[in-house]
Length: 76
Image (cartoon, helix red, strand yellow):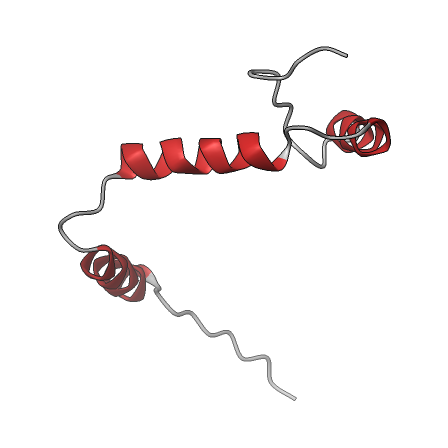
């Protein structure tokens, strides 16, 4: 059986995909504000953890599964 090598250039498809994403975001999208909102959401998610939740969170950070988020954290 013959080996078949196929080559497909994804450059044009990637350009179309990116154009579609930017068009879908619209003119009012503010990437800086979006990142700030994401940070606030993470702050809310990881705040007020009980001792067991904090222990698990710390283990996940230490294992490299979650990024370390030291800002805004109250030492207990």
